[in-house]
Image 1: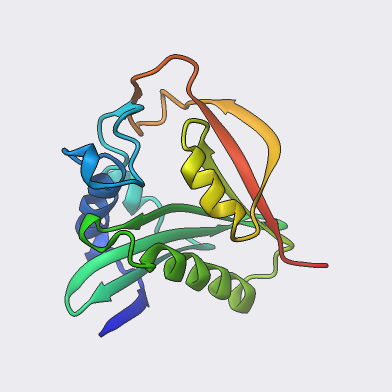
Image 2: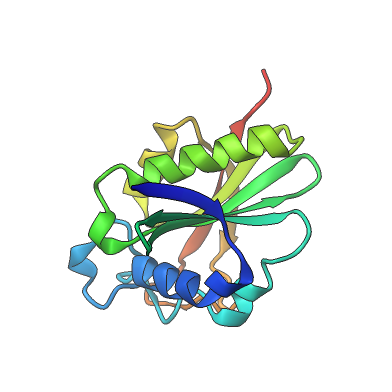
Length: 172
């Protein structure tokens, strides 16, 4: 039985392992959702995940029995919530788990945070992922930033890698 809970600090190591495996697997051919063709190195570290345990920051985890199979980070900013680190274990991809986690994040935001919209970042090269989010109501907002090479989230393997911002309005 699958269960979604709020992460605690004892989950940090498992979150780091899941995110790095989902974003940058050793065999990129096994996963459609990874960045391994465009970015080298780990996506996150223990210290980076640990820093997410603060006020107005939440990580939802999905377990199948005792196996961590998905996570998503939510952080409240003034008028919006930021979603990041949406990750699905490689063995559970293409089974709707990502959709369930995104819906759970949106529900958590609607029920617990007073915001007008949700924002997320996507690599410019990830057209299939952009399309996935667009089918769920997210739109590119025109913001484009260079890949943050100094953020400790990997080193680009391609020139001019950019980060695009996508948003979804929560109010009519």
